[in-house]
Image 1 (spheres, rainbow, N blue to C red):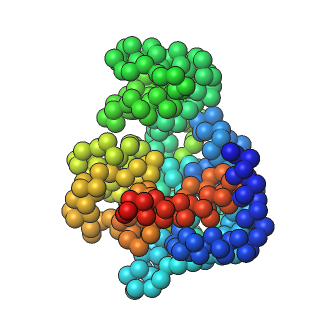
Image 2 (cartoon, rainbow, N blue to C red):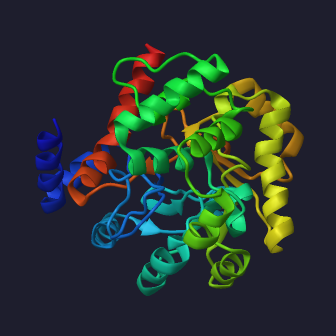
Length: 339
């Protein structure tokens, strides 16, 4: 399947005719791209198969400029407010707030004259913590699948959690079994069982995230800052109070730390909150939050509270396939639901 996807992606990248057909089939709608880590050296606390190289990142930017105009999310909001069309426009975003936003991504974007929004995890700013999933990724990458599976079996026994199923690893198992109010404690327990150094010593040495001065400098360079929650939960599993804390609380927290106004939010894992809770949040905090970005497989992108985006953190050929076919697939899903 991957070979087929690569082949189709390569064909698309070389054919303006195919691009035009696919864009029309997808309604040439407003697109939001997102990434996490752009680097030629992937740290052990990140997924080895998910980061994107600097060369692939640049190639994507150059390609998308042929058919779309890059604008910031705030400019997109302004166009919507003024009743202007967003067809043929694209925005670029990143999640988690890794330091590579400052050292690699921003310099490339400034050279290309492309705006972006960096969504930050409030609790990780200034390297105060390592996000729970990244702790588990580090365990997996450092100890390997066999030893990390032994550790999760120990934790499952200690905490009376379901044991890993066939084919599950520490990442998929934790996402399935961790309650959101225990995810940080359990990931820290696994870190401790692995025998690693104190997490604060690790963070002081590795410095995976942006610090406040770097964030302020990015903002001064006219990049936008948004929130990606306090602690990166699966928001579809939260009650209203916890959702409000993760969304509104994180926006306030980031603003208080940096002095930067924050009114954009991207959902961790792209998993939106339960619809009725999301509506309640918007109703109660419309003055604070101006956009909620996640996925519901609609991709109309006509309402900033229902904006969706596309993960492009892959090599150029796969990115071409995803970028051009995703709107068509989502239109088919929408049609199927309506039938």
